[in-house]
Image (cartoon, rainbow, N blue to C red; front, side, top):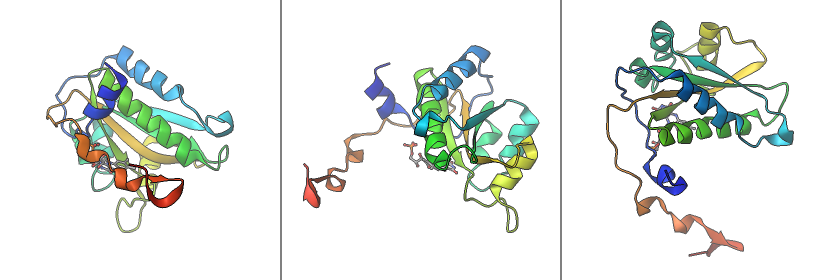
Length: 178
Ligand SMILES: Cc1cc2nc3c(=O)[nH]c(=O)nc-3n(C[C@H](O)[C@H](O)[C@H](O)COP(=O)(O)O)c2cc1C
């Protein structure tokens, strides 16, 4: 698929068919994540591939807005070693987005579940919850979970309304570019 078609057509999908994602596609998604830029090329990330139904169920309870993981056959948890990079959030965000775009290109659908800075309940952070569930070491921070699978819902592609030219300045803030 043409790159701009992928960008236009990728939408967040939160309901999935009961069909596993083949191993070779999972590997492709991870290759897409590895093919990315990172600050000082430190590559601080770590990805946890989750296809265990009980663990996916448990991840769907990580916080409000994670329930789409109930039907997802696959989740990739995006973590990073914060002792290796002070800009791990940026590095890990790029990884998550590469996974989402690659998923769409491969005929899959996905959605992002924010974990960093979110609460599981009144006392526990979503990060602590996910870390406990998957045995993630303390120096690794958890940015997000990308839920992935074959779509069970359809969404229209993005139209030209997303092109917010009023948010683009030319040479000086507030001077319109277009
Ligand atoms: C940083 C970030 C955090 C997000 N967190 C969640 C989330 O916790 N749960 C969820 O269902 N969607 C989440 N999303 C998906 C957005 O809601 C979605 O991308 C947005 O509504 C635009 O829709 P689209 O992806 O279909 O273009 C998140 C997206 C980003 C980039």
